[in-house]
Image 1 (cartoon, rainbow, N blue to C red):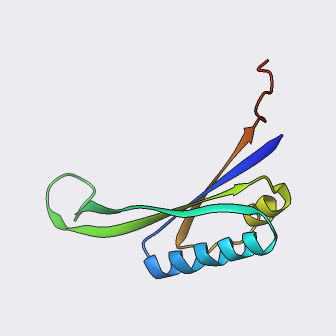
Image 2: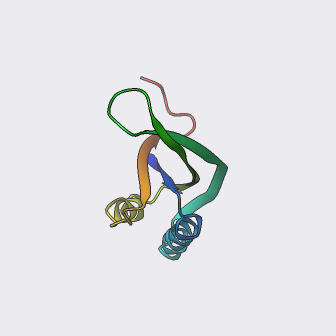
Length: 110
């Protein structure tokens, strides 16, 4: 059975995010695994209200920031996917890892 490891990276630092994703893609391809991506999503512009006290009322100006997202998929190479999954990622990059098991074509569904 083949596995597909889906990696999602999110950060407010676009340049650092691009560098990290590019380095991971190069490492995965150098190890001989199939890598699809990076796929980018449109940037998210977020606004967070800031209150002067814990209760409702007086506010500071809202804090606005942008987050960027990139996605990669590693197909079939469990060793490389495991190596990427155990990497130490920078604190300013949020990483989500999802592993899907893919059955070959013609495989009976039980």
